Amino acid sequence: MNPQLPFGWPVLERARRSRDSRFDGRFYLGVVSTGIYCRPICPAAPKAHSRHVRYFATAAGAHEAGFRPCLRCRPETAPGTPAWLGTSAVVGRALRLIEDGALDHARMPQFAARVGLGARQLDRLFAQHLGASPLALAQTRRLHFAKHLIDGSDLPMTEVALAAGYASLRRFNDALRKAYGRSPRELRRQRPPEAPHGAAGEVNLTLAYRPPYDWRRLSDFLRARAIPGVEAFEADRYARVIRVGSGYALIRVRPLPTRDALELQVSGAPAAALYRIAATARRVFDLTADPHQITRDLGADQPLRALVRRRPGLRIPGAWDPFECAVRAVLGQQVSVPAARTLAARLVERFGERVSMPAAGLTRAFPAPQPLASGNFDGLGITRARIEALRALARAVADGRVDFDAGAERLSEQLTALRGFGAWTAQYVALRALGEPDALPEGDLVLRRMAGSDARPLTARELRRRAESWRPWRGYATLHLWYAASEATAR
Image (cartoon, rainbow, N blue to C red; front, top):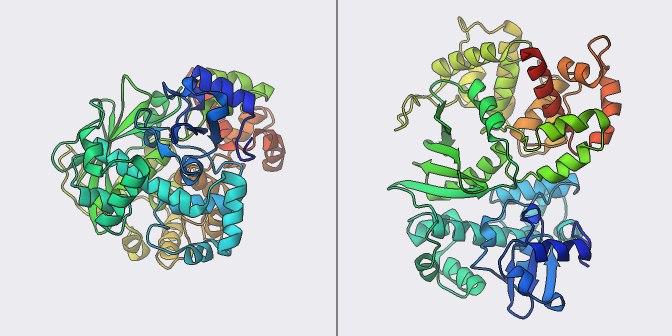
């Protein structure tokens, strides 16, 4: 058995033969007799004889072993693999950088130096934790996203190649022909009839998740905090303005009624920005989570058991922009959610750039760091201490002292070094802006009461000890306890 795989051979075999959707994206199987790799839910998966099957923790591992992606089950549409969970912090940061395209135009030594290791050492860590090299993961990312765009858009192939991170159309054509045995144009002619097609100037992408998925609670969380002019809900569809390079784009997200997936519509974005937009959407809507594993692990804790069974599809509601999340965390200190939203709306009205979007009511972009670093906050109702905290944050982001790509631990150190940023704010930003599943805002009074009692809330130190059994899902435990407190108050 491959040592990187999360399950033993009997479990893998049972999951393959039963086409168990709970394992979709958690491993891949290559069939030696065909040279193709599949998702465990593929209709062809149970037919292969065990002696012809090889198992891989990631699609990149299967690709690196010489297998081609299946055109029937389409591995590029699988739920994201939460492969970085349980790996070293270095591997986790490197994976996030690869997701952002850091290896598309950089050589391996430069990439490894950015992570803080030598190239050989980073290769060894990736082989140990993921069973594939950083270059293989980056290559598979490009291939899968290119196939996704071929199926889900009418973009010209030159733009598909650019969006997927290929330096030239020739390399793009060669890579897809080698991986799929067909040219990009042949793949488009054979795309599934159910694949979404965007209108002119629009790209539609289908982003899969593992059920159950609690869209209602996640969308209610975002709806309650939506800043007028920047974000809106159109029935059950979330829309917002996002910054893309020197311009702006519109994104819309809605659940698909007949599939375990969300639909992402992007309008006005250049092709080169599409992958990062899709990767950000996966984080914001927490699509790579494995709810069965989270429920099983947290359910081992007696006080949490009833909560996780009541909300098995709970996801971390992310934030589209880390700087925006940090600003809103400061505005929300010791005030209600509606009050924080009002302050954010005032901030946007004064400092946000005016934009023109086809969606009704979306007229502003959230401010960049520079206007907040030196802007006039008079009359906005923000306290002097919070104004100084916002200015300190904006300056630190502008000059690189705060790096949202640094990983949760390093980011927490950078934020708590600023005036007005305590451990609670730093952990809240890690939870929502980075999607850190193990974030724990241990100073939160509601959390300490729910983990203890109203008569005697736990201290921060007691909560930290109490939460050791929740690792690596302390962020999800936090959300369960917050929701439980909110629902108890509403009764």
